Length: 195
Image (cartoon, rainbow, N blue to C red; front, side):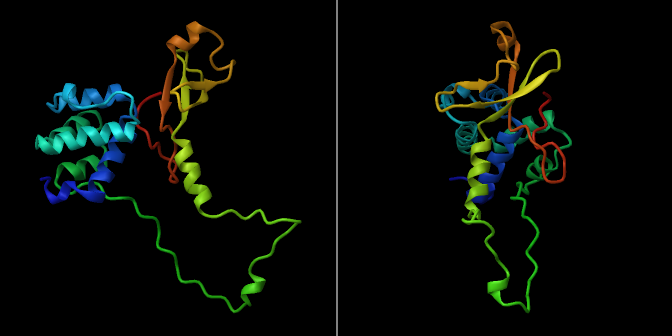
């Protein structure tokens, strides 16, 4: 049975943190090996990076090696605050946004919203959530000469990009697809891997 600190939301937060730091199976496998885990006993092939980290952390829990996984990640990212907290027994917490202030208006609710044009263009908040989920398939395509472009992964693990990004087989064979490359709301890189 896993210690209470490595269950539920805490484990999900750690898994998502590691998936952002190590977005490829190869990197995840390397960290797991450096943590002393036998990756041959963990089913990693053909899964999403979230599922890869789920499998690694579940195995690490049973081997009592979650701390070793965090230590291995800290060797790569010694300044990562979330990893620092996790190593000290305070696993990373989900980053909460600002609490909404109570808002009151003296206007009639019917005056607060107006549809312009023939049809409403309002979309539900789930539109943003779906966008975030779909964004996971988008990659920054990096070339050895420093040039880059974008692409996206299809359901068959096929990377689609434009011809001007990868104009030849030679260019494609030397390119790297960097997933989870993004800037946070505070304009810092959410993925610390170098392009």
